[in-house]
Structure formats: C-alpha cells, structure tokens
Image 1: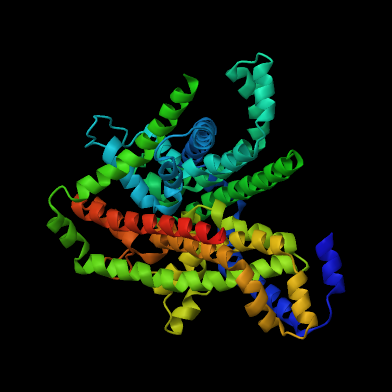
Image 2: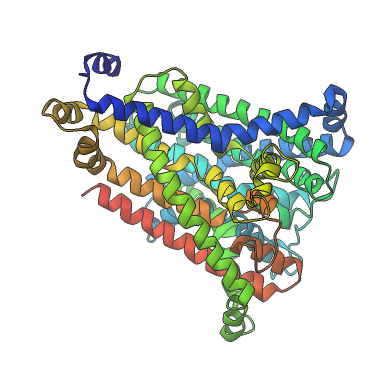
Length: 274
Length: 262
C-alpha cells in the first residue's frame, strides 16, 4: 500500500511527534467518551449474575419490545428499499420543475430533531388528523415514525450510483426489444443492488435504536407498540436499572452486528463496483 | 406512462411523509395567532431551554471538531495498533440507541455509578446537570467530522505535507498551512452535521438531564414536556423553532457543497 510506503519513508521530524499526539488524543477521547460508559453498561448488566441478566432479557415485556423493534425495523427497511430506489430514480432520471428543492428536502429527516419528527407525524396522522386518519398508538404509527427518520438512507446511497450508471447498456437492451421492466430487472437493478443493500443496512441500524420519533406517536403500549429503546427508557424511569442495562446490552449487540453488516456490505459493494 | 407514475409516487410519498405534516406544524403553531405562538416560545422556561440548547452545542461542536480532525489524521496518516478498532468505534454512535447512550453515561456518573460519588464529593454534579448533557451530546454527535474529513484526507494524499516537512516546516506549520486549507470544506460539512445532531438530540439527553423545566430542559425536551402537558401551541411553536434551525443547517450544507466545487 502506498500509505505504508509513505510512512516508512517519512523522515524523523517533529511532524511524527505531532502525529503520535493525534493518535494519543484520538484514542483517549474515544475511550473516555464512548468506551468507558459502554464498559460501565456491560459491567452493570452482569453485576447481578447471569441469572438476573437472563431473567431481565427474557422478561415477556422485554422480549415483546425487542420483537416489535426487529419486526418493524425489517418491515420499514423493506419499504425503504422500494420507495428509496424509486425516489432516487425520479431524482436522477426524471426532470420537473422544483426538482432541486425536492432533492434538498430529502435530507430534512437527518436535520430535523427526532421529537419534532414524531410531533409532525402526529399532526397529520394523530387523533386530530385533518384527513381523518388516526394512526396514533398503533404499529402503523410506529412504522410511519421509522420511515420518516430512515427516509434519506436508501435515496442517498442509490442516487450517486444511478448518476454514474452508463445508459448505453439500457439503450442496447431497449433496442433489442426489452421492455422497461425487463431492462430494469436485468440491467439497472443488478447495478443498484449493492447500493440498495448498503442503504438498507444503514436504515436498519438507525431504526433499531430510534427513540425520539417513536415516543410520541407509537403510544408505547407494552406487548403492542413498545419498542426496545422505549422499554429501556421506561425501566430507567421506574428504577429497574438491571433490566434496563440488560436489554441495553442486547440492543448494543444488535448495533454492533448492524455495523459489521454495513462494513460487509461496503466491502461487497466495492468488489462489485465497475 | 411509467415515468409519470413513478414521479407521482415519489412526490406523493415525500408529500405524505414529510411536506404535508411539516406544513401542518406551521399551521398549528400559528392557529391561535402569531402572538400566542410568540408568547409560547418566549416564556422563561422556553427561553432557558433555547439558550441551554445553544450552550450545549457551543461546547460539544468545537470539542468534536478538534477531536474529529485529529482522529481523521490519526486514522488516515498513522499506522498504529488498534487502527481498525478506532475506525469501528467512531461509527458506533451512529448505530446506537440514544437511550442506551444515556443509560451508559448514567452508570458512570450518577450517584452510585463508577465515578459519580467521587465527583459529587468534590462538588461536581454530572447527571441531572449540564456536564452530563454535554457528554451525552458529544457522544451522539461524535462521528460526523471524522467521517467527512477521512475521505478528503485520503484523496489529497500526503505528498504536499511531506514536501513541507522536508523543507523544514514543523508539524504545526504543516497542519495550518497545508493540511487544514485542503480539508476545510470537509471540516465545514462535518461541523454543520454535528451542529444539527447536537441541537436535535433528545433520547440521550432525556435520560441524563432529569428534565427539570427551566433548569435542565433543552428545546427538544421542552417540546416533549409541553406536549405531555397538553400545551399544543407551545409544543408546536418550539418545534417550529427547531425545524427552522434544521432548515438553516440544510441551507448551510448546500452552501458548503457549492463552496467545495469552486
């Protein structure tokens, strides 16, 4: 690798001392801010013994919350894969007035505070809905909240790939008599697939941990609309720190798996790139 | 035609999920007149929440910016043990539930936590006070500067830096004169994203702050509290303030992108 060669060549100047400092500060900061609290979390979850941990994570309400989290995250991610790809396609291939504004609006869920997102959805899909659709305190409301916060991921991973995609192949397929659906399925989709997968993995990681957007609209009904992060919050409020810590460790493990998934998808995407 | 159907679907989806609900928030905030809305966001508690939010961001964003640049330099320019691990840990806040973050900090700094008692004995309250809220905000907004600067550093390579070093520049001079100007748009973009995340944080801060109105309540917590107390005008008006900040950050990212290409 060139960077390896470069660092072997690097003369012993004060520059390398400064570089050593950057490694020290970076690892120190990460340890203090991120690792120390997470270590405390893991230790606390194990403090009362394996039985207490097992009881906490097999508590029926906790299991139901984890199940709701995983099932609805998967549903939302599947919807995102479709809707996100269509939106990306429209933004790249279609042309209409106001397209630039639509393109800018896609990032809004990243910038908007999650609690505002929840309140926003509740205004249109809550008890005082002007269109008479009340999805508050239902799993539909939960799904809407998760769809809102994860909207940009698939769009933003697919869009650049679609921009780069050579249209010659599609034109060739069309001239050979393929209809647009066949062209999409055989030519476009295989090229987009790694990007879609990447967006899906990012959406999933986000959806699994979501709290702010969900807390107002889902109603947090145990066994029904309560997700894991809301369950943990409730356990902290009612002073069941052991239960909260145990379920948090499960959620932490899911996050780590999701991150590893994202890494794997990225490596897969680079292998299948051009 | 297919093209039109897709366009209608995409725009309809965005309208139903994003634009109509947001428009409705504006409408609801002003439903009882702009005076009411203004009053709702200028109560002492609301103003306190607003300035507390700004204060927390004003501490967290510079801290994460300095760290972000240093960490990106370490990851790209240095080879050290645990390189991959550092890279992975940086991404962790993106995937972790904010409630888990809050609880983890709570277990370190609360009374009965690892350091909580010692710090309290020395007159330092972290949980249910500003330091805890700052730590939570730093945690959740940590990855953005690193993630924006790393690819830029990779792209520019280190030939110029090496040339400067060979010509006798100190590492500090090299950084200020060569590296920083080259990565400035990446840093700027990262700062904007960090700011947006810091201003909007809810879950982690909700756990560590104790949510005391007029004391440890940020603007997002204020929205939640007003909503729970059925003060909808207050909740909507404060939401509108936060939404305007979000739109301002979006506008800033567009400007940064433009700057990048000139």
